[in-house]
Amino acid sequence: MLVALACATLAAPAHAQGTPPVPPARAPSDTDSLAHAPPALGINGLLLRPQHLRYEMVTAVHDTAHVVGTRDVDLRSGSYGAYPAWIVSDVRGGRVPGADSVYFSTVDFRPLHWSSVLGDARLALEFTPDSIYGGTSGPTGNQNIALGNRGDLLASGTMVNLALELLPLTVGWQDSVSVLLVDLGTARIVPAVLTVDGEEDIAGPGGGRVHCRVVTLQAGTISARYWVSTVNPTVVRMRQELPDRPGEVFEQRLLSRN
Image (cartoon, rainbow, N blue to C red):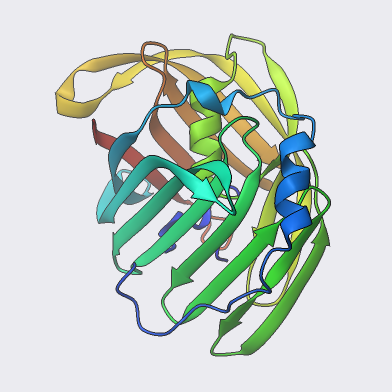
């Protein structure tokens, strides 16, 4: 999968070979209508700040863990179709290098554009208030994507991480969202629930202890857990069981933030 929640985090490098599919150009009315669409997630994107996050990616079976790569996430301000936007790039190195680029609106945190490269697979999507369109390409062929959009959509793993920096996380808090699941054969929007299960102190960057709130994202049979620091909120760790590999889990651990 190119994405499943945060899940295909073994996804996405800008130096990969080939060119992603290019969806039709956005019509001017699409950009204009975004400015008037009411926020549905209740997230104020103006509270974000440019940042660079570096993670190590680890797979673990029982008590044995292996570092499989690194992940560098950069958030910067910009524009998309003359609409103010945050631009987040997500470059992964390791066994399956890849790169994502996501544009989302500065004010109401709505996705505008997403492109991704994972090995020989390519993805490019455009988002309007009511539609998602674009396509994927890969060794098995090309797939056109056309879906109805939702106002509470978190379109990629990087959007999930950034949303957790801004949401009012307290123990017992719960809210519904939607996530986009895409592979080379299917694309669908799945309802999901975010739940704050508790608090925990875990190892953070540099070996210190970090007090975190523990958040579960459940979308059907897919589940991921996030440890979000309570001071200067950041995803310090993400953990997910791999459904096609019983007993194996995938983790991301924060190495630095600046």
